Length: 115
Length: 113
Image (tube, rainbow over all chains, first blue to last red; front, side, top):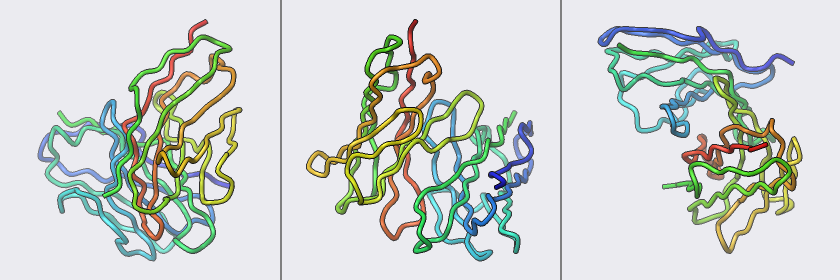
């Protein structure tokens, strides 16, 4: 069974630039969630994708957007990067509601630094 | 809105001592509850979960947690700490019929020799 993978591991960008982070879900999982974890804090929910559509969103501005592909992998895009976007971005995969499982499985994260 | 509080941002115990990490949640109905562990520069690993079956839940690495509805708590315990338990621990709640998890701020556990 393949776990959740994320790429790249680390990334350094300049304020105002755009970034794309990638995630491959665990085998058999059809739902992907993205979280932002600032240094010293708990993860904050950004959004979730199911059946290639956004299925819930946290308190993040529209410059945070995403995609899910037919193979359930996902991308997180952030436009007009700000210094406060520096964080660990975590992807988590799971089964959809009502499919018998409640937990999310997390990837190792992508560490984004904005200078 | 759901919220999770974890009392104590940093807990230190001696090797072999009892570990107790506190978690309280706010919810009008009992949610699903989880404990995750995060080692430095890694993602989150599921320790255990409560999904309305037994209120005392056993997880990996000797950890367990008890759901107490009257106290809206889900504290994590381990009878005897090991050096390898040093990490950041996060309590999380998932609303029934909800999509996302709400995480607490985390508790950093240090284990002293």
